[in-house]
Image 1 (cartoon, rainbow, N blue to C red):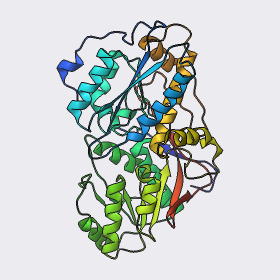
Image 2: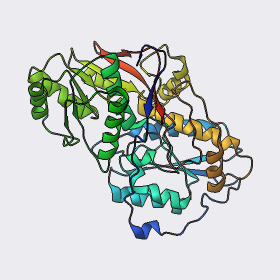
Image 3: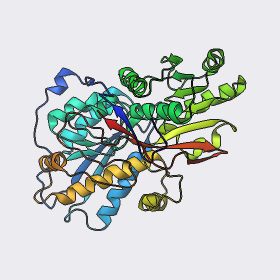
Image 4: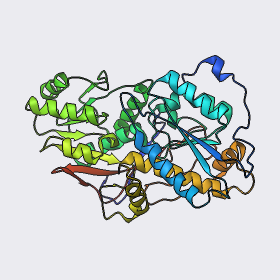
Length: 402
């Protein structure tokens, strides 16, 4: 394949396997209803969001960015006079807590939709419940496999599985590394989804992993054994799906073990200014940015997002880009509804929506009526160079959906 073309298109088929949600049968049999209040002008428009605000891996930026968008809408009169009431809950990365908070938001608070969430467990635990309650979720940071395999969920981000395929593809096809070793941290039911991403990369490129260890836990205390394995296997590159603390632990262990000349292929989860400053010097680190790289100050499409985040004192990260976009898309949907705004009308509008183009993203956003959704299937390759992120390509790397 010629990856020098402005936009790279790779074949992808059935990347993420369908996975059953982890909610109990009794809860799944709860009574259904249209929900979302009466839609009258004297009621707020209740919107929910479940997030990992505490636990092994946290994602607070997405919901904070969505809140900033909704606050701006409310400050100018709301939607036809109705204010948006944004209910943000912490699931603590705990399935039982995620189950409880979802039922409170959906059935007790009568939310019309879920928007801007970022959770390790929400999609997989609550997907069937959302489907039963006919409530749609514009996920700000899709993590669990269920986020991408549900008729009622459509993340704005590409997600860790597509990220995995993209960063492996960039490594093998653009950087031409030959011997790639993989260290994959598994949570919940994510193992088949990561394997599907690796298989899709192999099918599209003919490349194969030289070594894989999928037993590495998040929050690992010592990465020395993994660093030693990199040396023993003679790896040219290392692919890892780690979050920032784990990636830093792996890099520092590699330095301590005198592992040199390695190309590191990480995910968007390490794309932050903090990581760039903390990473050991001299490492070749590449990631696919799921949205227009926020570290590119010349990227004019990020202007409104950047100004809003700066005004609110919020972090400039891919996670805040995801929350901002989820809320922005949702506001556009609300404005398109002519009659009452309630769960039924919001669900109908999302199913019938036209694609929304936004230059912050490589592909248009569309929910639609399908049984699975991967509207964002693009990434922009970036590299950590002398303590700063810079673009490693001139345009999006796009994975076609098969």
